Image (tube, rainbow over all chains, first blue to last red; front, top):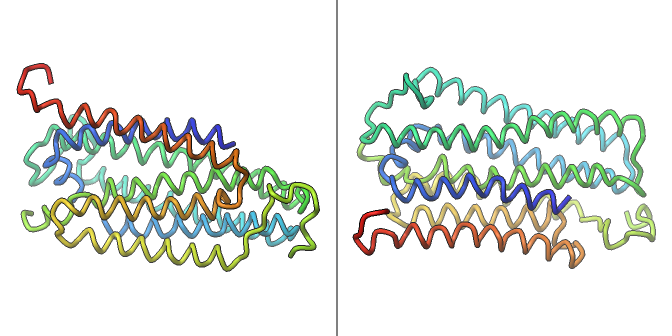
Length: 196
Length: 109
């Protein structure tokens, strides 16, 4: 599982690399585009995701102490919180759609000095958050299977490896978001604040 | 709690006390709102360093405690270390190129 996560680090690492290069080249466009993200929704969503990481950690704990119903409960809680995160994310995407902030023909950006490269930011924004969200959607489906298996009593304190490995995956996705949040939502927010 | 663990795989299945999870959890939540709040204060070029430092600290907490690396085997630690090392290689070697390209003032950047 850890080796799989290493390949995932490289998968996401490539996108982070692209982000760092373009931010270095077009700092003002990135700063003005970053302002268009909703800081408090982002912080709220980060909180939701950390809560889901906690319930996942507690699920692994419940599995390791052989508490079946507690395990099922915590897995369901994790699924709910993951769903809440995706819901807020969908709302944010919808917001971007309404404000013509999807890169492409109808892209509009009020008060952006450098429209072309602002689109670049939003391409990366959708690419990175989209890749992250697709990981969460896949995770949600795996969670459904695990909830069913746990309910059926497949796991015990002696053997709960799938729960443990899924926990690693879920926490990894959390770690990715911990970096996406400052890079996409927080960067250059203050310095440009007075200008707009 | 100890009675529930069997003798085999003791090092693999170390059970972390619940208090640790909650302590980590509350630290993560607090730091999320601290970093959101700090981003609204103008620290000049320092903003990004503060934001990334908090992110690295938060990620370390998740990896060490939620992902049990702190209690893991040396093999696990080595694999995690390798992953981070290669990521640093990727990011920094490329950025060294990007940072220094314009220094020469020649075309082709």
